[in-house]
Image (cartoon, rainbow, N blue to C red; front, top):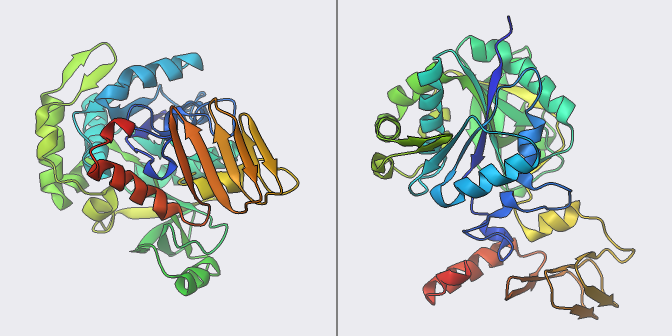
Length: 354
């Protein structure tokens, strides 16, 4: 009998570059960005059906109720909501999830997806998961290599080698310069690294223990000391002793058990306002507008408001966002400026606005 896959919704991201929409109490995965559902709802719905178990969510302790409520709205009851006492990046979270799965069954197949991404082709996602299943069942950590849509310098790349549906990973390349990105896009051996992967829980945990022992020790101790109630698994304070490190750095760049399958799934991470503008429906003048916005003699702007009227007049390539009493005005081609603005608010002691 074919083993069902346990979907894991990684919901720890803060979405800083989408501030002020994305905030600590309600980051971007809990918002509707161009669709009828929130991002976490759509992520969960992609991984339903006969081949999947109920999902596991890992998120901040303050977001457990929100995650449960939003999934219930689309008819999904998570098998578990694992909560972090504080964010420690993706490696401790991934290892804690693998340890949870291994407690159920060391051979349990798990697929980890970020809860704040868009996927246009769900059938292609399922096909990529099935293509990677044999390698994962053989003990490989299988990454979904995302087909690039252009020479982006915003994402890391995976280089594959060999033949077959699941090819061995030759190297990881962090965000390259533009000329290098152009070369990668033209080479079928390269794909984007979106941090989506699948594995047998026990096999992944073994690699974490070998290659990132401090992370594994902290994550496993946190799970052993977890407070459990219903679907809630609140990781213990030992989680805070884990180094704050990405799973790529801690495990994936070191392991010899990494493979990659091609995943042409229409993926987008909606990581900043410019990316959201790209994905949004637009007026004849290229403006993406939501809420009560009046645009006159404008071009290629994004504006959205949760109440107050916004009037744009005689401007191009800007972003205006009014959300919960805060107004952001920035250039559309300067996504890094939003994060700088968030840091400025922190420096001024205005974390209440974050």
